[in-house]
Image (cartoon, rainbow, N blue to C red; front, side, top):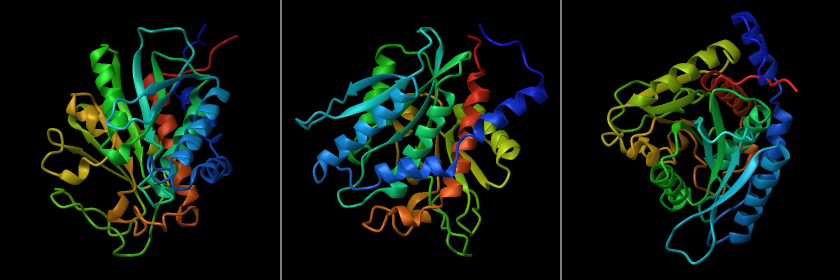
Length: 310
């Protein structure tokens, strides 16, 4: 059974004690296992090996693992990897936390997107034993670089099977910072100014995702105040700002689900984006750790997660 209701101060203390369990050392361990070209044509074995690592990690956390085969034009077998909380309930609303595990054809994909995967795994490790009003699914999508094939398949199955999806949080390049003046550029059409130093995490959501936006902002200010955060909700499905439609949140937006992307803004900051130089040594490990901690706190709040009694 669930513990008694905690007071606000006890609740904050619980979350604080949880998120500090996400460490830089653990983030680096995942990155060292994942960084490297992971492409369906140029490095299919590495793509499968990274999937195996992700699967083994999720299972070691106590999550139920589902391999969801992707419908696509290729004859090869590609899968989304879904880690599900083992609470035996199928009627709960679902919060998805996702990140893609493929890369472009020649890039080692440290920022894009081993950084997102490392954060995903650490949040999964932390939240797996908890239970709440919502259940959290941790999804590693394949074939994002091939036109979001993995996330589109997942979102299509959610709609087809009438899965009670509450919302999705997608991690897309969350590991690169540059504190120099002028290092941050602005996507065309974005109706807001951005800081000229590329040292913040960005949150981009659709209008229905305002509850996620607000929860993440509170989590950052409460548990990781040293993490600068800029958030923006797009009108409609982001059609007027094409650069907001470049990752796995898009299939959720296009089907009307609330979804956000957490991002370091990729090539609007990172000169190594989609290049051979996107390597582990370029990443800001403390930054990734803060993003993961803030995301974990956000998920605990949104899903009302608590420790369970024996």
